[in-house]
Image (cartoon, rainbow, N blue to C red):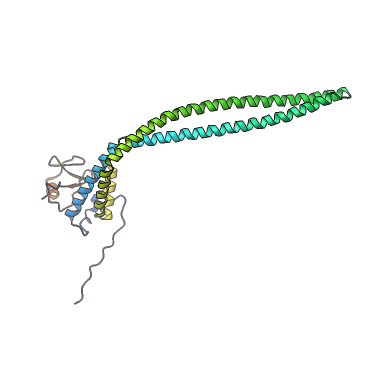
Length: 273
């Protein structure tokens, strides 16, 4: 007797805007029952909550460390830039000193020529050359003085930046040590929670997990899955839930979405039938 094969369901592409509401029609179409998937979602949310608590223990320290590291890097870049400027000034001074040596040689040559002049016209011409060479020499000397003054100013700036770096370094080291202590004290627990979280996520189909992650990222308290609050309200937005929906939630056999905030509402394990 021939057997009839069940046609394969072709999964449609995941819509990045998809929410739990749009999953209601296909939520039960998987190897896991609705009850099992709701339990996995509840446990996944709890694991994410615990991981977030550990992250919150670090407070603003990671951001403060990152900001200090960026400031230190900026100071080091500034020092490197100032050192390049100083190097260029020193190169300019060396070049101008060479020019002065050449000018002095020319000046000496013309002065010797003055001793052997034959007429006033030649005397005037040589004196004019000496005057021009003297002006060029004074220009070089002025530029050298200005360069040395600029070098002194830049070195003073480097010293101030280095003093700031010393303070930043002490602050950065202290905050790094404080952060390391917190991370070390929670590393084992966080590693276990992350593994639990990954194992739970692996039990969900891609579409459901995508919707969970997106809803969690879009709400301020990062709760995509909530329980009933105060007996009759959504634990996410605190709006009242209708009696029929409360019955559906308690049964655990149906995906119930809050009509106000779009979160999935489940019964706590000890209250589920």
